[in-house]
View 1 (cartoon, rainbow, N blue to C red):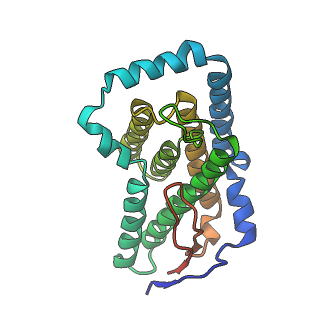
View 2: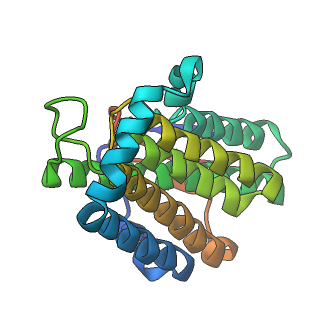
View 3: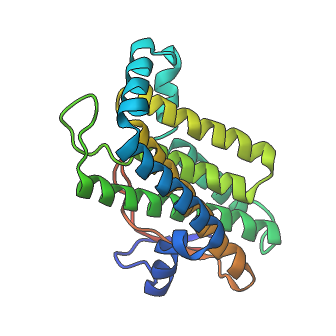
Length: 239
């Protein structure tokens, strides 16, 4: 039976340290982080006049997404992440008890939740530290793009834990979210690149930790109340 108990101090401090640093300690995630951070830096400091500003003008003038703009924007509000998380919990709960499949489903849910949460946490900290002004208004939380962060956290987990025919559409959706954020004049190109870097690095980093420890992993996990769109309930799930 699945039991759910909510508590204020649900994180194991050792797990937190390993997981929050996973973009730098896990090779695949570290490579993505280095390339993504370098590309973001170059774009922000050297390509603003030649690429960033002209791209903004072109995209916002044409509004090429049309009626698809709002549905795509929802994909950056943790909607795919939440659907995946709940689906994996449901498959595990109603599936064969104590089976390898059940363990995998629960682990999928845990990886998705943690990758999304850590990525959103880091993005939120960066937003309120860097304080970049949005292109479409006085709001100063443009860098990085939170929508793009969670969209790429979703895509990287799906891509890492499922076959390519799931991963490719997930990454395509995440890329569309990044395009939508620029199309709506909510973010610059460097904001989207940074969000994609943070989301992908945490998705690959957390997944790598779980792959390495899966043989000794207990199907128990915890949550913290951080999201760029609001707060998650803090809790501990045991299966």
